[in-house]
Length: 144
View 1 (cartoon, one colour):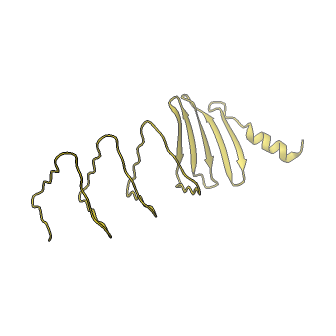
View 2 (view 1 turned 180 degrees about the vertical axis):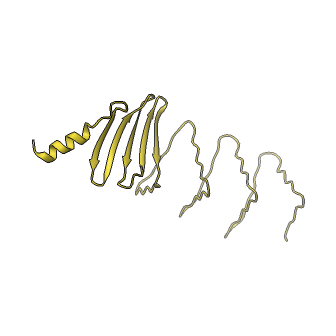
View 3 (view 1 turned 45 degrees about the vertical axis):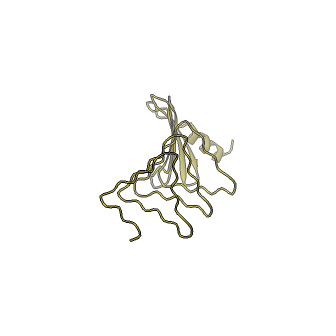
């Protein structure tokens, strides 16, 4: 075998006896596969020691951690389907579209915030209900 092939093979099979760890150098990064008590961890380590990508294999399924952000650009549609979906942003969440936006729930829809603003730049704002429309406030101002 060529010497460079031996070096790659040596890096691939380097194992610490107590950690059962494999490493593979890829350019300036190292791919690390480590067995854990609950499964394993696959991580990409940068030359500066940071871990921008980590996949933890757990009994409940894989957990993907992206520590340097994520940008996804798709020219076609994206569809997400799940029993439950939670999106949480620590500082700000923004939904924008160049076209229409439709939000529909088979059950109740609740929005809560410190303050809320509903505005229509062009056209009407319509409220429609099958039953009563209830408007409560400390003061209800109309046409002000």
